[in-house]
Structures are given as structure tokens and as C-alpha cells.
Image (cartoon, rainbow, N blue to C red; front, top):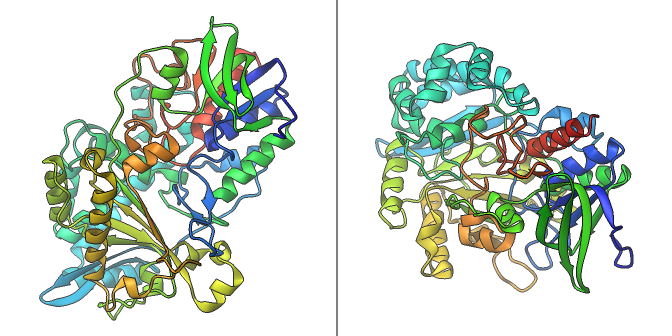
Length: 523
């Protein structure tokens, strides 16, 4: 919003935070004819779903924080008329390993025949591939039935169980630790590890954690789009939030950046939102307030007792390379290996050891992580000169590095962890990754790393948790409300990732909060 254009006195809806969920809610409500104001603390909208040029003087726009799309319903893209596309990855994953003194690995993708042959090359038989097919056929059926419910009023547990319509799948995913199914269905340690990783993205848990936090994480990673596929956003993640901001503005919403919200007061029917800008403080009225921030921030703004933060547990690394490194496994083309998810130190026993070491307060000796190359699928994020020279991006996401490990020395531990993580990758490369890194205009290597504490500082993620809190089951529980966005204040709703069915780049909490408002207004 231009600096001279101040907010009016009152709106039908004031949205606190201009991340992707807040923008989804703004676009829906504005298209329904409601007056909408979005107040964003930073100088830009987008939150964690942004594209930036992190390396000085280098024409590469990277998805700096969130980076892949699975949970965004096509319904939202259609409803809001978004000019936004994704591309599928032809390779799902590649996992290198050394067996019997020789480099090998598991390539999943490129067609059924190639995947079957890759399983046979690694395991020496057909049984693991058959188990893989059966397991993911099961999760695919669950995805087809569960994903459409995310943009509907919350089902009860029994209603969702009937929608799943598969008692074995319900037991495996919803009732017993995912490690039970992994160990019962798969024999190969590497295959077990590849399956388990979807249960650990941003979630610090063991395969047999009795809380089933790992199961909830696994569920959200296999139901996206009704297929579980994770796609590449064309133009980077910022292309989505730019499209959402445009849709909201075109519908009449006002987006005010540089406006930090300080407090919300509500009597259940009307609310006032106090904010601060570079020019001072102001107050705006609202019939409804939608908070696109964490449950902790919501509590602070409304004067309630904040819940205990859920600890984040990931390392995010962005890199730009002059070329992709060669692999020790000469049977796999690096352009295929890095186009999907490249698993590093993610065997089943390795994951268990890393978790145990981190739980004991130590950095994992072999930090598990996974990498993918956005620019192989979508080169538009690179300037033409970089594309012509063969430059590529790499995104690395590390597991089992809880925020507590960085408390005493964030900068020092970050560097130590980055070095040991890249050493695990180098063990499977025919040349050091450092030899492939590009340099910026000042001659520095094009690599940046973010710990949970960095994410807490940059994005106000409590504990650096990328989901704002532990993921929830996608069904109604005590005090969750009709849409899973309700709070104890009747006209204050939570539309961020901490809502029920939140987490990931989905827009689902934003959609559901908008639907809750429109229902209350009788639309």
C-alpha cells in the first residue's frame, strides 16, 4: 500500500500477516464483496513462501524457505483464478549407498520398469519392490479419500475413518507408530529409511514415538493433491504468493506492508486492531480478525496465555552451483539423481542413531538430509546467462537437528553442522561439492544455511517450527470448532499453519477461515 494511503477506520475483515494463508483468506473474502485489510509487518508479503536473490550480484531467485508444493488444492487455484503452475518431477528420489564395497543406490522414478530394476539392483530380488507398490497403493487410496476433506468442515474421527474405508490403512497411519508398518513390510534398511523420511520432515520424532507425531507428519506428506506427489512451483515459491497478492488486490483487498500488529481486542462481535508503522501507531476496527501467525503470536496479541512452542528440528541450505557434481555411482546420471529427492545418510538405522544422538543433546555424527535441484525442472528461476553456462540450484533440508542444539552458539553450531552434512554428501560424490559451488559478486561461495533459531528470528516461527506447532490429525477433536480455525474469541480466527489441517504451503487454513467468516455472515 502506498505510504500516503492510510487504512480506513473499519473493515469487515482485518488479516494479521501477509503470508500465503492470509492472502488466500483476503482474496476469498474480497471476492465475496467484503472489505479487507491485510497488515503485514515486513516490507513484502509472502511470509515463508517467497523467492529472493540471496547471493550478491547473482541473478538467481531461490525459494528461500518453503520450496515444494503438494498440499495446495487445485480448488483454491481455480476459485481465485491464479496464474500459477507447477511441474511434476519425473524422478521421485535417489538414495546413494555403499554395498559390498561398491557405490550403488536406489532410483525411484523414470517409469515402472526402471524403478523395478533399481530395486532389484539394490536388493537382489523383487520382494522389496512389490512391498513398495502395495504400501504406496494403500497410501494413494487414503490420499484420494482424505485430501478433499481438507477444504470441507472438519469431519469427526469416525466420519474420516469411514471416508478412508480401509481398516488396515487406518491402523497403519492413524493408530500405531509408522515404524511398525515399515519394519513389517520392508526388509532392506535403505528402503525402510526412504519410506520413513516423509514422517520426519520438520518433525523431531522416532519411528516408534508413542505420540504418533511422526504419523501425522507422514500423513500430510502422502495425501497432497490426492496423490502425494510433490511438485516444483514454476518461477519459485514467490510466484504463488505474488499471484495470491495480485488476486487479493484485484478483488479490492488492501495490502499494507510495514504495519506491525501490536494487539487485538474483541468483545466477540467487533474488534480493534492496534498496529505500528514507521510513522507511529494506529487503530483499525473489524467485524472479524484473521490471524495468519502462530498460535503463540495469536495469544500474545489477544492477551491470552501462549501455548508451549513446538520445537523446530531442521537445517535449510540454499546453494548455487556452476555445475552438478559427478556421482560415485556411475550408473546414475546426476541430472536424474538431483531432480528428485536425493537422500543422504537416511538409512533406517542411520535415522534412528541420528535421532538418539540429538535427543541426548549432541549433533548427529552423520546428519541426515535430502536435496533437490529446482532448476533442473524449472530453469526460469535463473537468469539466461546462468542457464547458458549450466548453473544449477540445490536445496538441502536436514533432519533431526532440534533447536535446543543451537541454543548455546547458533553461529558456531550452524557451521559445524553444515560442514558435517556436506561431508555426508561428499562421501557419495566423485568430486567435492565445494569445487562445484558458484561464487557471488564478492567472491564468496553461494551457500547459505538456516537453523531453527534463524527461522525463529527471520520469520517469527516459534522454536523455528516450520508448521507453527505439532501437526494435527485432520479431524475434529475437543475444542477444534467447525472449521478448525476458531479461537475462544468468536470473531477472531487463526488462519495460519497452526490451525487444524495447517502446515506446509497449502492455503487450506486461509480458505477455511474465510469460509468460517462467510458462514457467520450468512453468505
